[in-house]
Length: 160
Image (cartoon, rainbow, N blue to C red; front, side, top):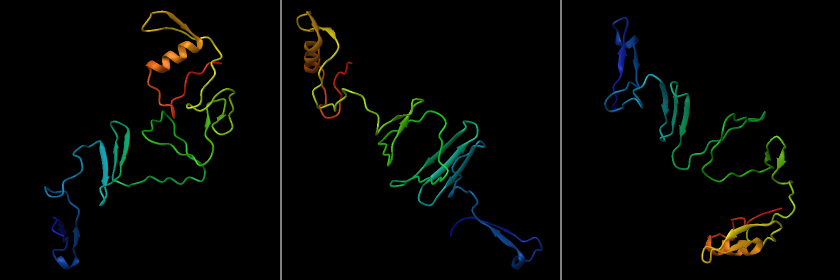
C-alpha cells in the first residue's frame, strides 16, 4: 500500500505481533493540525469536520453529493436558516405563529406578477423629468417605465 505502519511485537516474535496502519506522514498528512477540530475525510473527497472551539459542524460533499436524513418522528432546526438555492416541498409549508399555509392561504387581490394589478390605494411620487407630482396610476406607470421589472417573476405594486 506504500504507506508507513508500526509493527508491535510485545514478545519479540513478529509472528505473534500486530501491525498499526493509517499513521499520518508527509505523504498522507492529517486533514488539520488543530486540537479543536475533529475531521473525517472519505475516499470520494467528502469531509465531515467539527470544531469544538467555534462550535461549528461542517459537511462538505463532492460534486453530485446529497444529504438525506430520515426521521420518522420529524426533524427540528433551531436557529436561523439560510438557503442558497431552490426549496422544494412535497406537502404544504406552514409559516409563523399564525400557521399560515402556503397552499391554502387566500388573500384577495393578489395576482401573479405578470398580470396587471388595479391600484386601490393612493400612491404619490414625482416625475423625474418634469418634477411634477404624480399620483396613483400615473405614479405606477411612470415607475414601471424607469424601473426594470421582470414581468414573469417580479410582483408589481400592491396596495389594499
